[in-house]
Amino acid sequence: MRVREAQTVTEKWRFQCLRCLRVWEDLYQARYHGDATVWWLSGVPAQPPWADPICPGCLGLLVKALPTGPVVH
Ligand SMILES: [Zn+2]
Image (cartoon, rainbow, N blue to C red):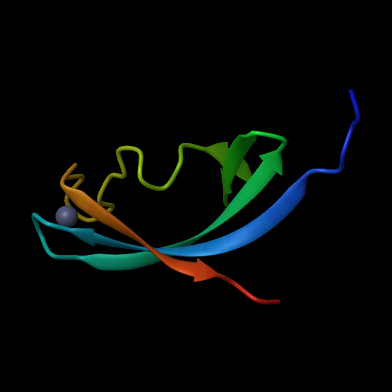
């Protein structure tokens, strides 16, 4: 088995709360380890952006997550 360096891609995700209509964005880092992808947010491991995002305004769970694409450095 060959060990390859993990590839990290920064992606910007836009979220919209369907309850209070708040819109916000977060920068996620996706680290690809072979077939597995590990998501990071603000320097800590996180759930994938589409997995049960919570609205920071009303703590609602009806949140739509939209990828806006990779961030080019
Ligand atoms: Zn909300």
